[in-house]
Image 1 (tube, rainbow, N blue to C red):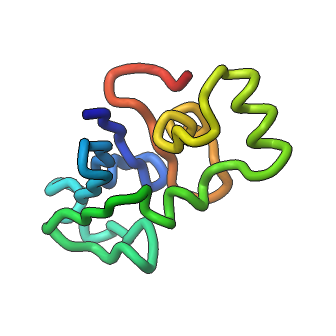
Image 2 (tube, one colour; image 1 turned 30 degrees about the horizontal axis):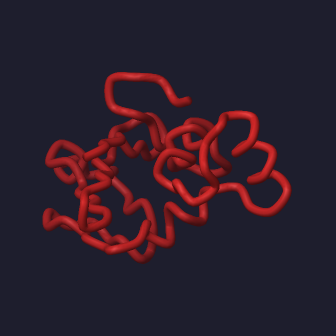
Image 3 (cartoon, rainbow, N blue to C red; image 1 turned 60 degrees about the vertical axis):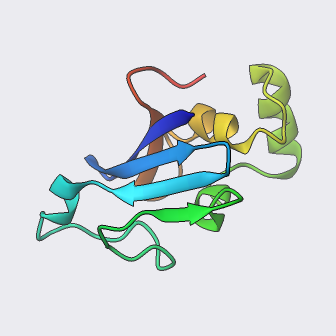
Length: 109
């Protein structure tokens, strides 16, 4: 199991987990209790129940580089292009937009 923190701007919004069965995302209780909290995606509205998927959620998949940039990052970081979770941990710290993904207790890469 691999775990990442998902941030909305500078606040931890929830936890993204890679499991044997696929992926899970759950908003944090503290984040849900914040009246200024926003959903990270239209496909993932605020709720206390976890989201589960056999594949990486399309929202997070959309944060990944594509085409030649994916090839360059994959080769440079020595990460298999099909290992989307690891790529997300490597590239997710500084994406375009308000949502970032960071490894729990470590650095990307």
